[in-house]
Every structure is written in C-alpha cells, then in structure tokens.
Image (cartoon, rainbow, N blue to C red; front, top):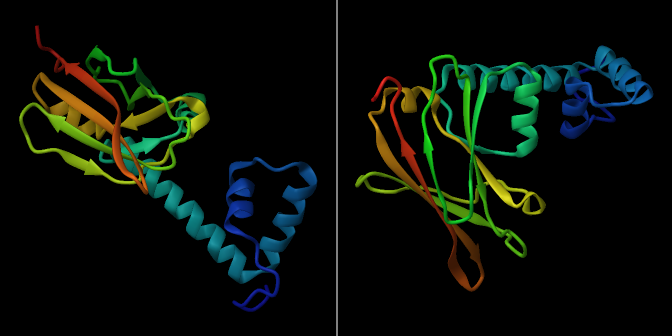
Length: 190
C-alpha cells in the first residue's frame, strides 16, 4: 500500500458510489485497484462503510428521526425493509398507525417546492412545544418532503395528533408552504 498521503485521492462521491455498487465495470475496477493499493483511500472507504453501518443500525433500532429522499425509501424497500408509508396531501391530514413488524415509518408530505431553496420544519405533538428542524434536505422536483420519525419513540406514544409545518426560508424571510396533521392511533388502541 502507498503511504497514508495519497497523491491522487478518490473523492467521497466516488467511494460511496463504489461501495453502493453504482459504477460501471471499468470505474469499479479502477477504484478497486486504487483502494487495494492506497492506505489513505482504503481508510476513507472503511470510514464510509462504518458510518453507513452505524446509520443502518440506528434506523433498525428506530432511534433516528430524519428527513430523507424518495430514493432512500425506494432503496429501503428494495433491501427488504418493512416500510409503512403515508402520503399526506398539501395542507392535509392522515389517520395513521404502526404495526409491530414495521421497520421504517415514512410520511410523504406533498408540497409546492418550485423556487424554494431552503426549508425549515416545525413539529408539534398535541400541545407540546414545537421541535424545529432547520435546512432540511429536499428535492424540489419531487414535489414532496419525506419524513422518517423515530420509530422507537412512535411505538411508545399513546394515540396523539402531530402537526408538521413546512416553512420556505430565503433572503426575504419565512413563509408557510404547508401544514400537515397526523392523527396517530397507538398500536392496540381501539
């Protein structure tokens, strides 16, 4: 292996695509050869794999709340995860619950995202103070924000109502782009 300092380091995007198996055969072989001979890039690849494993374990335990992409949800389903999905229309509501064998819970919030560059979200459960999530990731072309709540937390909650407000943020200030209500029935509630 080459010393820890690499003269032509591979970018994180290339290492991630390599690890996910998203490269064509030639690019895969080129990175494979480089990583096998380069200690620095091999270590970075190992860090990416460890991070991904940690994220996967945290999701499996239901201890992560995240705003994710539709592609993330597709990959979870393709990987065999039991995913419960709810689609909530713009400024709408949904009756929802979770089953004991669900491994991931997601809500697709339909939203007008054209010309939006930054979104903050406020989440209210019943009358508790709002949780604020700043600069959440989104794909404007998808027309939706995808929320994956902490599954372990949702499992322990009684029936409740949760509201999520999406705010567009730009140089002129904030504006509401959508309000969503979840009428959650706890598992086993009548």
